[in-house]
Length: 496
Image (cartoon, rainbow, N blue to C red; front, side):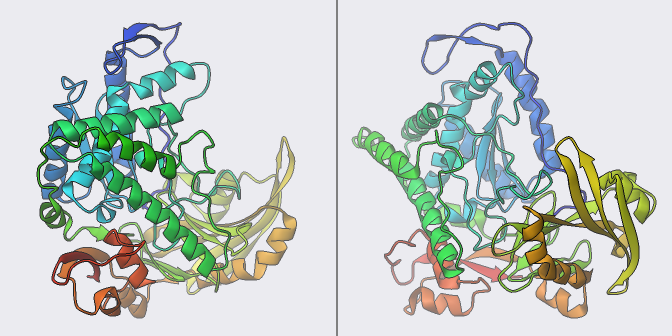
């Protein structure tokens, strides 16, 4: 949860008219397009500014330079080497990478710990470069020119991860209401994703990396799916189905088979070292999971050192920390409390905030004190085209002159009633950070260590991670089995 919470919405202008015929740089075939290359460049630059405003770059010039150099190396061998390419590491814990028209490619700091080598990262970036070179964004705009089009981006190799084992790994489905956390990345179609996979393998070969590293990336994504399933079973939740989010998307199993076949076509090449040691050095010290600036989820606790607030989730409830808001969701997944920072423009006092943000048509307020903070609780309703919508929320004046809205959301009235004790418990736990809270609110960072004789069990004893042994295996590419060699440098997570 950042200082001001508004979800990322990148509006892409749909050009008037029926478009013109252009030659696709990858296929060499003519295709109708509503976006010229100049349009791609303009829309990409506009969207890039919004991405940076929403997420920001990781404050690590050496890492940014490393990723940019690798990206430029790949782009120089692509079908659109003449573009002015831009490669950015975003300050987001989500496991993701995406591309925008015109040569803008992004990887999050969240994905970097789960890749094993420079060649793995090249595979991810090569895939995203492929989306740009094949003009997939322009194709999508052309196909949907009569519809509203959101962000022209694709998640890394089509995977949207819903693991709850660590903060920021995925997003809630947004089924509580339109204001609940929701995904923001529009996917490409099956054929476009498979074409990007093929181009990624080709670009890896051209820069003398083994295309089989694309296989390693797919296996890492499959391991994430398995980990998410294992965590769900351990917590008594339904096992997530990784590809239900878009039926037309190729599954990781399909991708693994296709990439394996592609890689086999390049077996006669001479490949460089995959760059494992260089990669570990490049990512050493990056923040793992949530950052202090975005708020830290630590089990049932949420700490925000920058804002100076904290709260506690009831037993069995989950905390989801997104860029726009914090959601505390019950075990059934049908009710939750959403916490947002209210911008100053929303109102000069609690009643104005309630009127301007909730827009109620009826209701009543009650003045409260929450752990020494001034608060106003509201219960009422808003009349909509679908009927009367129940509203319940609390406005709180927090530390640092910030105002917060804590809103109750539920699928229906029955779910709200069942969850009410938990919702009230979450709300009543909202507090200024205490000295004890601050001592627990420490960031985690990636480091390396020699693999000990005691294996991951030994490393787990000194790790701050929940399910430490499982997550350390996941970080080091052996979640499905296997062991590094004794003394081999492996990735670990440390508190700082």
